[in-house]
Length: 216
Image: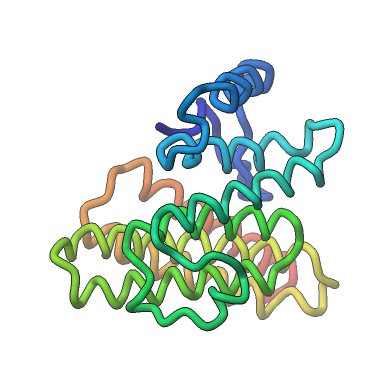
């Protein structure tokens, strides 16, 4: 299951849904279904709640629900139960299956402007992918998740640059660009789809454009 049709805004790097009313109806159907709290459904509900939050009557309440469900999904995948557990979780104890739910949850925290908490989860996810990339039976799967983690963490650092004073933005943009470039290298190496490669190239261009605006 995936998000309904959408595109990534070239400036904010946020997902933008093609049909918001249809996406709302889809979210309502998922929430009302008997399998609403199953991992495959949560994999759609969490990002949908996040992306639809700006259009909601109470955006913060919707993001809070996305965060609650995000932690539920991480726990169901065998990951840490809360932020305190995540802060002390060794990467080798985080199952590879918990990485994607961690990324979805981290993006919710990012959209709530709780960047230090989001960075913690992105960092844990990256360490887990690298550990499993050396020890897991499916090395290719771990490397693909590493690409995904680098890209999404880059989006978080990029957004932090947009939220701070212009004089403080350059380091965040530099970190975002480095993460995007490494993600692109890995995606090319693992023969990712043209769409995945194009998405990272778009992010690289966005970071470079913002740096150019700062005279970097």
